Image (cartoon, rainbow, N blue to C red; front, side, top):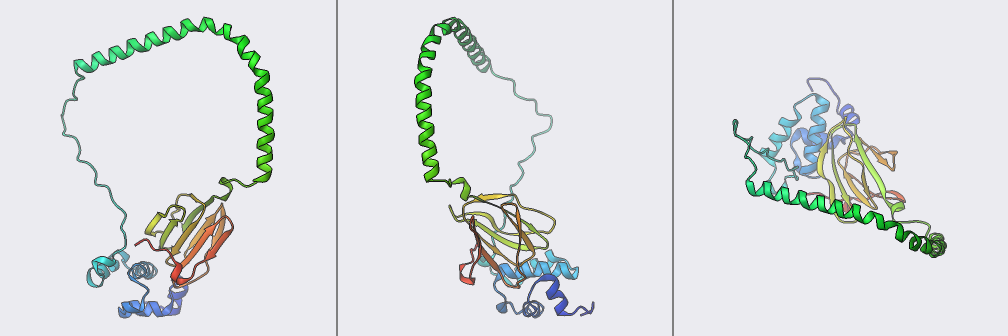
Length: 253
């Protein structure tokens, strides 16, 4: 209100429906889809207004969100303690040095044995040549058999694999699942603008997007997402992408 910004302007900028913006302002959390989307909407709304998005989300979590409703947070590894300064590296033991010496002698003996057997390789040349004719006929037969099978099954498994990556243009919640094994490739994370995900490969993806501020790259082809203030879900295979109904959207919580 102090900046004299109309709700319709923010709605067009953030792709968040006006009724949800009013619900955020009035703290009417029951009118919003759920805690995960509330946090996503708060971040996007705060960025559009130039506010501290992290502080707003933290205040919401402390005052309104139950612990069981918290979205999965990425696991942050704790750096190991640094080694004590001035510690003198341990010197190899005598037993270790002796073992290294024995291994070295064994390697030398093996090399000498291989070199001594090299002179007898010429005696096997005739045997090798005599078997070439049979191998050629067998190879030709295998080639014809392989060609016949290729005609019967022109499409292989690799041709059904889809390559998928995402490039957000604003803050967006993403849940991406590999349906072949149920693995969560993006386990309900907030992606920031100016970044791109790695390229994932699978036969069948399902994805939930918090808003439409993202471009999908399916097999290298850019696919935009139509504007929507609600969560959007897709099923993506080699045949194309199909929008999911509200009850079919995958969840990463």
